[in-house]
Length: 504
Image 1 (cartoon, helix red, strand yellow):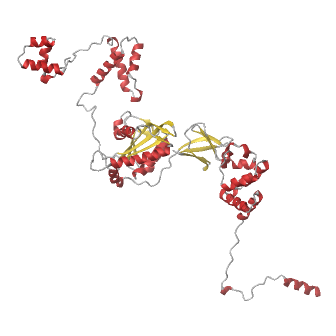
Image 2 (image 1 turned 45 degrees about the vertical axis):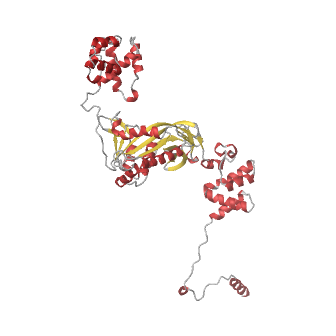
Image 3 (image 1 turned 120 degrees about the vertical axis):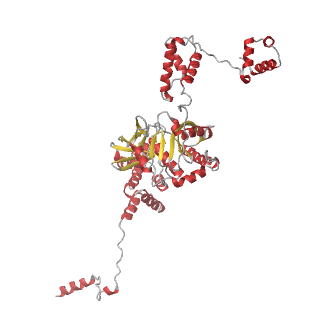
């Protein structure tokens, strides 16, 4: 194909009166090419192949088109690469190159694309009223936490009218994380819109039917009912139905997570993300109302949002059995519970940052949640009833290693010394916590130590004295009810009676 400079030279020399034969001889071109360059409109000279031969693909052409049709029907995540399609053809006898398959696939997509003018690839711009809707989605981002690389799941929430954004990172993409993200986003925005737009995530949707019909998860519906918004699920593989948050995911990845973020903890990362969302809103104009910023648009939308009456108790509950060592296994880690729940079935309520264990309606444990694996989290106070019966476990019991006690109890343990007898006396003081409470025992220990006595008997005596009921208050009698001859408490009068009787 001729370059533009050659075409321009041909047309210029022909306009000057030079013969086509001379031009073709000087430029070493055929006269047919010269004539075509002269007749081309405004110097446009391009070659369009009218027919495309397929010497290698011809025998497998139908099979290739079948694979391409099946591939287009799959969800985007499950679609095959063209290298995989070429490999399948090779296994079936195709001996051509991958480039031929790639070129044919590109031409096939161009020819099968929806015809222009029928609206298949066009979209209608959407407009939302203040307080009408929000969009929700998750993305996976790579960060560095405490010096270790970590892939976090980032919840993205976006108000459709003001375009305000909120981001929060989580270690998991579970239901309790979804609940926590909603609660924090609504607090950040200052209210709740009327409708929420989601994809068909498993934490929200249990079943997908034809059209827009969905079966939402029961706990998710309870959350939506608590905040009084209507959940709406998009068509599968139709990301344009929540295009605002889809676009937010791409922009946030470039502007917030590149280069890779480095923080000491997830809490520090989330604090930085929230501050960045506020900074972003103050500095960037609204895409449709360029005279105001996103922060000003959010401020204008807040009166149209529904108020947050109370936070939703966003937990995911599962049943677990407690071992004889007062431990449960949850999310690949072990946690201790109160001794009275040993060998019983408990309900574990998992929140985004903690777990709460209940047995027969009573809370028997609460721990900060661990997201690693193979860790055991003890609360030594859970084992206090067992320790009271087996004081020898104080020395080698796993829950009691590096036990952080109040300062007064730590001093008492040091003064009592080491040995079985010292352990028994110290455990006797600890057992009083079950009756009097930790604060009362700590005060009694401090009083005994200030008196210079590190004695378990004295501490138990102090606690018993403090448990005695207070003396009843004296009753003041008015003057009108005062007795003329009040009784006198004088036992000597009885001695006079005895003396008179003896005389008689």
